[in-house]
Structure formats: structure tokens, C-alpha cells
Length: 429
Image (cartoon, rainbow, N blue to C red):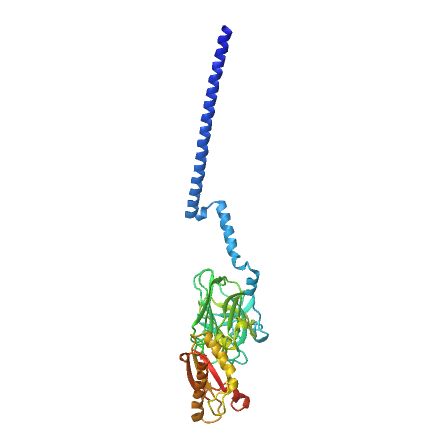
């Protein structure tokens, strides 16, 4: 009896312990779940707080955030060079084959005006910077031009390159100048450029502008065309930088330290001479050295050349189509049959471009009097328009103008020259 009682007490106690253990384990489990919840909530709250702190205080962001930002910055730095072929296309400068002018300042005397240059306005003198002789544009309006072939103003032509090194120091950020490379027609003066490369030297990164005369514009000084490369370089850091220009018939390309930053496909030809100008502070000159001007240019990129007709190509490059292949009976406005092939080319262009308007100009040589040639050239221009109308062109888009012999393009004293002067011009309006 006693043993049974003891056994029953032991079993009851064991059952009590089991129930307590299960309760304890249950409570432990509940606490673990609560702790896990609190940990998740804390982590979410901490990440949210860190993100807000980073946004409000970027300088105190976490190491992981800084690492991420650095990675993004590195990607941005190399973003425009990921394509090797694209990078090569931006570094295609080749100096022209025949040097017309070169000045490395050898033998020059410091403090004197550079002997291979002429002064347009302001002042310039030879200086020594970092142990090298150079030209210092020391006036706040310094403007100089190279003496090429005794100072003539028609040496550039339709294919040329210009190179030079330039230094300007605006690290204090208290007086950036305006600097220009100006290309002018032979008969134009400074401030009336055919096209201008302008350096905007302010701010931390510099912008390069090109303002140019378009092929369809009258004269050589009204610059309708404009191209801008925004913040493409740092050239105000007191170091030497290399600059290069190529002009090929219609294409302007400009390079900074070997990288092309300006690429104008269709500008007006007629370059004669050039100047360098700096409008900076008197106490902080612009320095120039190693100037080279050469005949020849970077190879011309023919846009869709295989698909362009002769008329389309001429209009794209010069704004007009000039032909000596539209022929008339002598002293008459009667078209010869062999002229129709050339007129058909113009008709094809006009039907492909129905909104284009032409001034059709008739030109004669100087054989005969103006009283005969002036009305004859008008009648010939009208005959061309009538032929184009018969081929399906809208006469509303054409206007006949007789120029007579007043605008020759060649010497009328020779047969070859007179043949060139007998022409028809289609001027895009």
C-alpha cells in the first residue's frame, strides 16, 4: 500500500513536471517569435532611417553607400567611350599635307611682338611659361593674325587644318576670358567672321561653341548656323591643351586634346584668313604656342553618297546646282535635245522634294551686247522652267532670272572660260 502510494505520487509529480516543461517551451517559443518580429521591424526601421540620413546628409553616408556612389561615378566617367569605334570616330584628326604656316617661337625675344604675326587690335608679346616661349595675349582685347605669304588674306581655301596649344589659368574662378578662333572671308574684316570657334571658359567644365554661315546665306558674315558642345573639357586649369580645326569644303570639325567636340556637316565655303582673339583680364594673359596651318583636311564624310544624285549632293553642300550641260541654239532660247538629260535630273530632285523652291538663273558669256544678252538669258531661264513644268514640276516653285554676262565665273577671253560662263544655276530659296 505504501509502495503504491509512493508510485502514484512519483507519477503525479512527473506529470506536473511535463506540463510545466511544455508550458515553458511554449513560452520560449512565443518569446523567440516576438524577438524575431522585433528584429525585422528594427532592421526595416534602421534601413529607412539610414536612407533618409544619406539623402539629407550625403557627406555622412555609410561606407556601403559611398562605395555604390563611387561605382556609379566611375561608370559615368567612361560612359562615352564604351564603344571603341565611336571613340575612334571622335579622334579622327589628321593634319593637312602641306604646311602653309608654322611658328614654334624659336629665336624670338621675350617682351617683343611675335615676328610671324600681325596685330589686329590690342596687344601681344613673347613670354616664357614653364620654360617654353609662347605668345601672350596680354591686353584685355588682344587680337592677332598670322603673317602668311606676306600678309595676304586668301590663303586658307576650301581645305585646311589649324593647330595650336593654348594655356589659360582660371583656377581662382575670378575672371574667365572670352577666347575665339575666327575664320574670315578674304573681303571681310574682324567681327564679321565666316565661322567662329568660341571658348566659354567659365565654370568648372568648359563649353565650346561654333557659329557659322550656312551655304544658303548671302554674303559671309551673317551666321545663322550654330553648334554647341556643352561642358566637354577642362581647359582653364593652367595647363597646356592642344586644339585642332579641320575644314573640308563644307565640314567643320574641332578637336580638344585629340577628341572631336564640334562636327558641323554643312557650312559655307570661302575661307580666306584667320585670327586668334582673347578678351580676358589684363593681368592674366592667354598663352599660345606651336601654331601650324596646313593645306588639306580630314577626309570628307559623304552623307549617303551612294544614294545622292548630283543635284541633291550639290544642294546639300552649296545650296545651289550649277550646270553647263543645259545647251541652247546659238543666239536663241531653244533647248538642244541633249539638254533634257540634265533637266530630268533637276526634275527628279524637285519631285522628290516638292516644297523646295528654285531661282533659275540664266547666264551668258560676254559675246554680244548687254541689250541682247540680258533678255536672252531671261528667255533661256524661262525655257528651262517650261521644260521642267512639262516633266511634272510645279512652276510655282520656280522663278526665272536672267543674269546676262554680268556674273562671270571664268575668263571670257578664252573659249574654255566662255563655255563655263554659259551656264544655268538653280539657287535654292
